[in-house]
Image (cartoon, rainbow, N blue to C red; front, side):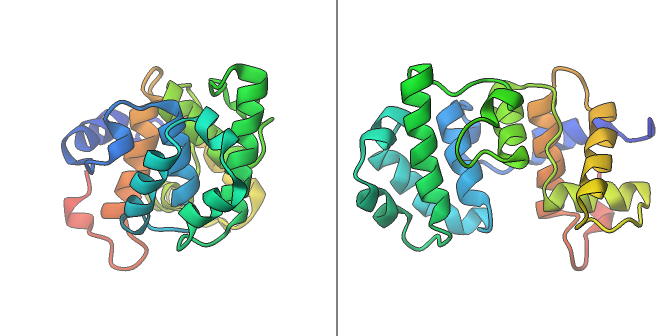
Length: 201
């Protein structure tokens, strides 16, 4: 597995990453909201909602104190309303137990409402640079194609196997860039249909 060009990928990401608002300062709350919104929704579609939502609820304290109907109204158009409810419930937990600050470790984040393995790993690595792998659809596609893996990616054991592979090649101290570079590669180049292999780093 040591033939994976991690440093080449990091260099590609530095030069080619999309200019997304949460990437400016990596404020943990903003990273969290972006990850929840991006589930089942394309980045381009969710951006206007993201910016509007943050203006209305700029931090966990504001979200925790908001009227639920106002939160759902701000979410209107994104669908899967349980995501918005879980977001607010987790914000209340964060305010009550952690003075409004998100926990920094994946295992701690897993205790919060709506934080499954993916969201926990994404927030821990992207917001806090914890050395954990993030496995989403894009990452599964890039990894299985690169290593020629034929396993069924819908199976939990396959995801676990890929997570282990990625944690073995993740450059220590660069989880934020590494995880995002894999997701970005899958979103821009290594797409499901007609991947642009000529421009793959």
